[in-house]
Image 1 (tube, helix red, strand yellow):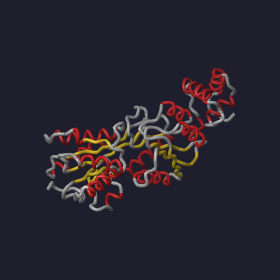
Image 2 (cartoon, rainbow, N blue to C red):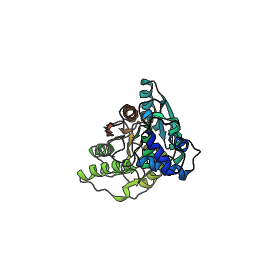
Image 3 (cartoon, rainbow, N blue to C red):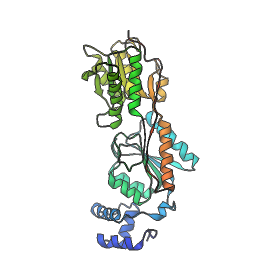
Image 4 (cartoon, rainbow, N blue to C red):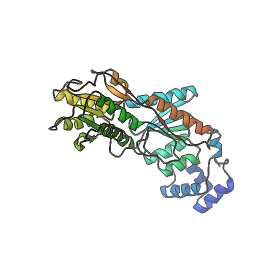
Amino acid sequence: MAEQDGPRVTLAAIAEAAGVSLSTISKVLNGRSDVSPGTRARIERLLQEHGYVRRGAARGESRAELIELVFPELDPIWSMELIDGVETVAKAHGLSVVLTVSGNRHAPDADWIDGVLRRRPAGVVLVFSELAAEYRERLRSRAIPFVIVDPAGDPSPDVPSVGSANWSGGLAATRHLIELGHTMIAAITGPEDMMCSLARLDGYRSAMNSAGLPVAAEWERFGDFHVTGGRDRAEELLALPERPTAIFAGSDLQALGVLDAARTAGLRVPEDLSVVGYDDIPVARWIAPRLTTVHQPLKRMGEEAALLALRLADEPAAATPRMDLATHLVVRESTAPPA
């Protein structure tokens, strides 16, 4: 049987309790797809109850020489920064990187877990808000370390994750606009069900409140972190009877949408409208006017996530910390005092 490195009595007990053969247990442990969902779920539950961990994999005997990086979608600009960071660490350790696109921004698809168990990578980096408890236990039982990077939600305390200081970024962006003299400042953040969106919006609110400025409900908009969402929300804001003189966009892509909406409305940036983005992706330095933005260290986030995953591979009992990297404002030409 393939799983001699676990206690045979435990595996035999699991097989007996599940009413299956040891070969079926082996299929589940190896991520084989030829096991019915009901049987697989029953075996996985029993494995978890018995605290089974694949000892051979924990020693690195069966790992593939790769790091798996999993996205809900591949954005050609934003994703490349994270990929570059993970790839830098992988090369330094003689590993390759495999990219997987699966699920939505909250979690990968159910069939992803079976595939990763078969591949048995040295580590997994996931760009999601959370990982279901069932998936976490299945990965841990095979000693496959995983790290969530830039979590959009609030990961469980036992989930290792790497993110950035979203609240501080929103605060710095808004304070910059206030210091320029703006008082009518709007914010377009990301989806309402993502923690990073809410944190950036809270930073905006804190800056406005500390300056004694009103925060009008109609000046707060939830977008989707994409260009079209930024353009659509900006068109709504610029059509208000009292339009804002500055907009803080929760991502650089949304800021590009704001710039497009301003051009359509016949407004000049920054003379008629100041715009601040978030992320500091390369295109922020190429557009005209060059974009003032909050630098989020995406490449370093990818590096730290990959390093943490490899550390957990060597030290399975190591703590599972949450790491938040600092952000800072980069001032360029898209902001100026109000006319």
